[in-house]
Length: 255
Image (cartoon, rainbow, N blue to C red; front, side):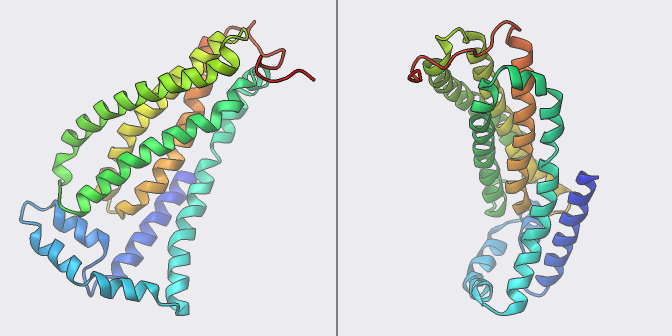
C-alpha cells in the first residue's frame, strides 16, 4: 500500500509540474527527454542556460501560489517516503530478540545506514547531473553502472577498514570480536549496494516518466531500509549466541 501511495504521489507531482512548465519547456523532465534523444544536446542546454535566471527569479517570488505549489510538491513526496521508511519497523520487530541481546547493533545502526545513504546519494547526484547536463544519456546506464560498481566496492572496502578500527577500539577487544566483524561486513555490503542503487534510481525513475530529482530522497529512504535489514541479517548469521555485552567497554570508566 505504501509503495502504491508513493507511486501515485510521484505521478501526480510529475504530471502537475509537467503541465506547469509546458509553456517554457524548462522543466527537468522536458530537458531529460531531450537529453536522452540521439540528436545533439547543445541547443537544449543553451536554451536552459539562457532562461535560467528568469526561472530563478520566478521561484524566489514570495507569492502565496508559488509557496503553496512548492509545499505541495515537497510534502506529498515526503509524506509518502515517511510511510515507506516506517517499513523498517517490521524488520526491527523480526530481530527484536537479537537487538535486545546484542546492544552493539543499535549503537552503530545509525552509522551504517547513514554511510549507505551518503554513498548512495553521491552516485545519485552524479547520475542526475550527468543526465541533465548531457554528459551521458539513458543508453549509457550499463557503462555508468559498471564504473559506479567498481568505485562503490573500493569505497566500501576503505570505509569498512575505518569502521572496523572504530568498532574494535571500543568493543572488539572486549569479547565482542564477532560482533565487530558483523558490523564491518554490514558496512561493506551497505556501501557497495548503495552505489549500485544510487546510479540506478535516476535512470529507473526517469524511464518510468517521473522527475529524476525524486531519486535523491528515494535513495536515502531505500538505503535506510536496506541498511537495517543487511545489518540485522549479518549480525544474526555471524554473532554467536554466547557473545553479548555484559559489561561496559574497556574505554568507558566503571561506575
